[in-house]
Image (cartoon, rainbow, N blue to C red; front, side):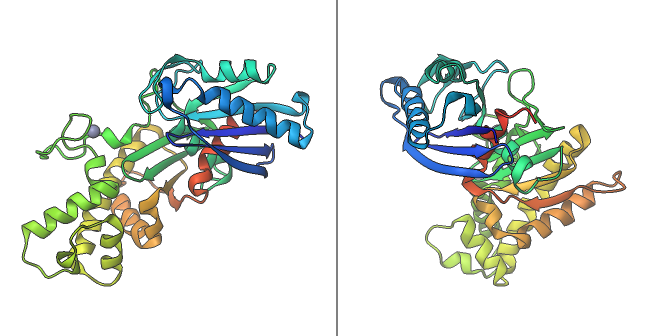
Length: 313
Ligand SMILES: [Zn+2]
């Protein structure tokens, strides 16, 4: 049975996994990300961690078909990383560097959001579907598009930047990107909090959210689940905007299924049912609408997707 490594490189931790080509995970561990001196030790640490694991398990390099690595920034199709702000990197090809350390084992690089989407498509919420759009609702809004089992990264790695699609041209507040009315302003954890503050300011309606000193997205979800109508209205608006974003994705690449993950998705079907209802309202042309499912791999999506990069299935 062939084996491969999946590496998910984050700003504070590197997650590593050893997989069989069937998708079974054999070993899973973490090492810290040393970002000092512009991240010059990061790849050396990862290479040593993989070599150490191979020695520990008595694996020869012939038994490892390859490795993949998800990187928190833009990655060119040849694996080149021009810059990565979180890590301090400039002009690095992490796959190439690691491959040399590992005695020629091929190592493939990809953007972390895209790689996580590939993980969900391979072994998570999108399993069994070749074309999947995976949306991550965390602090921001991430998205990765997989068509026919392959990541769609586009010309300069911009494909799938759904968080910065303009959905509301009436918006006056600017997004981090400088544009106004981006989807990310409404449909991630910070977006839900922003909407909650607006709804509270716009009316006198009673709400448990008024008693809170600081509001989190989870507070809004919990209140809505408990029957708080103002909180419910916030989530309705948030999912209405997200549904509009998914409509754009559908009419451009037509995925078989949407997979929704990230911290906000812990609200489960309570939230997804709202999203499905708004999405169906937009998709008047689709005879058979794609399913909208919950992600299942959580924080492990990145190592699964990275491992999948290394496999020629
Ligand atoms: Zn934006």
